[in-house]
Length: 218
Image 1: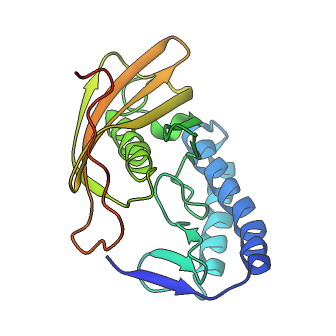
Image 2 (image 1 turned 180 degrees about the vertical axis):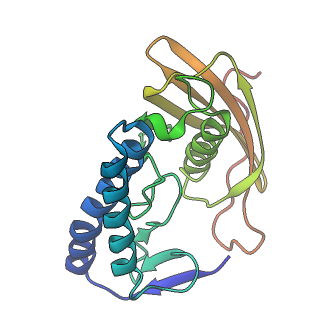
C-alpha cells in the first residue's frame, strides 16, 4: 500500500475542509433526492442538465485515479476518499468513530435511502462495510496498525434504515494477530454481530501487541 505525504499546514487543512465538506454534503443530498424525487419530467431533465454542467466544471482539472491515503508531515491522516468516512466521498454516510479510554471504538450515524437493500432496510453489504471499518479502527486502537485478515458476520435480523450505532473492541491478541468483536445496533438492540481477525503488517517495526486472552477467559 502506498501513502501520499502532503506537507501542508493546519490552516490549509481547515481551508480545504471548509471548501469540500459542504460540497460533499450537497452531493450526498443530491443522491437522496434523485432516489426519492417524483417531480415532473421537465424538472428531471432540467436537473440533469444542471448536474451535467456541474460535473463538467469539476472535471476541468482533476487527479488521476483515486484520492489515495494521504498524511501530513506530522502524520495527520486525510482519508478523504474513503468509502466509509471520506470527507470528499458522497457515498460515505459518513461514519465518524470515537475511541474510548478502554480502547473501545463506537460510532453513531444515519443510513438513508441510498443504502437500502430489502425494503426499508440497510443492504447487508453496507452493514459489512461499516463493521469492517469500525472493527479495523478498534483493531488499531492500541496504536499498533493492522489490516483485515478475515471477518465473519451474523445477521440477527434486518437492520432498518435510520439512526444506528456500531461498536467494536479487541478481545484477544497473539503475536501479529488480533481478534476483534463488534456489532451494529438500532434503538431496539443488535442487528448484526461480527468477529474479525486483524493482522499486524510484517514490516511493522514498532512494539507488537501484548498477548492477551478474551475478557472472562480463565
